Amino acid sequence: MVVLTSFVYPESPIRFEARNTKAVLDKKDLGVGTLYISESSVSWKNQDHVDSGFSLSYHHISLHATSTDPNVYPKECIYIMIDTHVTMPGDKTEDETGDMSDSDIESEADISELILAPDDSNTLHSMYEALKQCQALNPDPDDMISDEDDVYEDCDEGIEERNIIQNEINESRAESDTVENLTTRMQGNTMNIGYDSVNGDQNDEEFEDAD
Image (cartoon, one colour):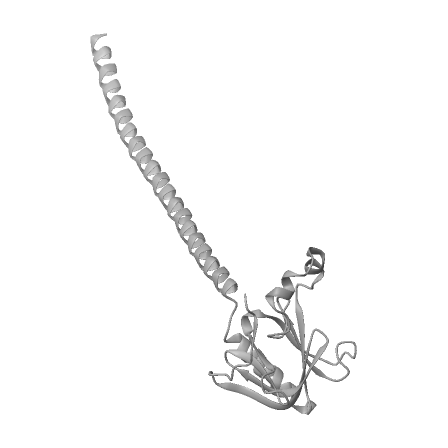
């Protein structure tokens, strides 16, 4: 998968542009150039070498932040973590990669680090905000699938909850019907008992007359 492509002037709206911005990829100084933060990519073009530059998709940016740590870079800068190891277009051909031993390939980092340091540090906040806003416009497809799964899970939970409530209602109605039937039967038995009592009195009178 190609992550870092040769520089392509952004076709989407550009949110931020800064000349005299130094780029450093995995501690390799790429030189000074013009940075373009557009809604679809982060692009940088070397101002001294027309053919040198890159374009990076937001989907491969794991992290971006402002840094004042001198161990990261001597001056305040933007730090970007790329989710896989990359090289500048043309730096390493497939033939050169094929000559590498398995141990060399395994020793390569799983990520790459990109430093963007503008000549004017006062533009760092605007640069950071542009990156944040544009990355929000390009959500990770895996996150979108996860969100859809959550929606389906919530829907299933809602259906299950409604079924539980409906079952409780049905059980309540069934109990109510049982109590009502029992009450009716008890009322009927009371009537029969009363009738038997009357019959008993009449029989007693008949036995007394007989006596």
